[in-house]
Length: 203
Image 1 (spheres, rainbow, N blue to C red):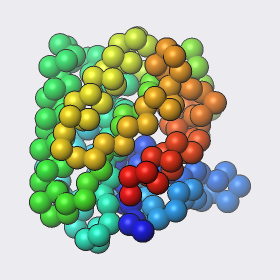
Image 2: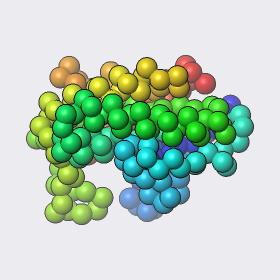
Image 3: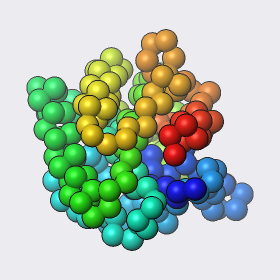
Image 4: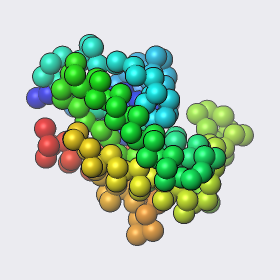
């Protein structure tokens, strides 16, 4: 079975694994997946920055294995609202992102792209952010605006030539927002059953 190497922001760690508070260790929850020891080291954390970086990150991925890119949630949650018109901004971000991925694909051809996960509603945002009990995760834009951004970004990614992990419908409610019971209480998917199901169907 091929091994999947994930790259990107925190979504390259979750839902692929889970942080164990008791052991203070990150635990892989999906067989044959390798996540970065520290996802912020050496890799830009937004789709915008990574796209412009032209960074090659797949050199160490074995030929028969898969490189999976997981970026875009931060862009939709924090940045696009500040750069109108939003559709033009997303078009530019995705174009540069795919250009950099294509550069990586010249070195390693087995590429997957993980969908941008459904956004969390503002009212469900908890007062906790990576261990800080008094800091809320930043949201910029209304619920409906962030939902619009994520849907459109995924639409463009799905139209690319790369294998697209599309599990959006499994993790959103009828209103399109992240189902809290399937999340980590924040912006990540925690229950990975549908990701595993997708992988088993496509590997």
